[in-house]
Length: 178
Image (cartoon, rainbow, N blue to C red; front, side, top):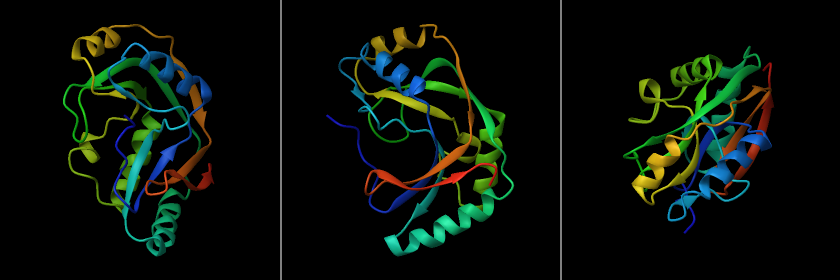
């Protein structure tokens, strides 16, 4: 079963992921056979959900986000381990994910939270930057995967992607420095 899609007209600003990260997530998902893995090409890392509205509202949302991004320099992101949310805020649990370390991403998220209201339980102080590997399935299998060591992956984020969840596609990009 494919992962649940976000409701109609939901927009977010996402970090572009290198193929090494998406390949790692795909390899790890094979060890969670009863879980809902992200299909190839659908791995994301949300920097901030920007809100919802009809497609006419998107232009205003993107313009506000671009203004908030002004002056943002490229920043480093590091994936150093596998973790889980035992109980997800939404959707099936557990959620196994690649844990992300990035002071630059956290600072960006905080800046965007000043412009766009944080989603309760998922953003603001509750924000956990991550790349989802799989949702649901066997909790014992998830726990075994969390105990696995992985080689760290580090990269510099040089662009961000505006994502349209209704269409399941990227709407536009912004290069850093913005």
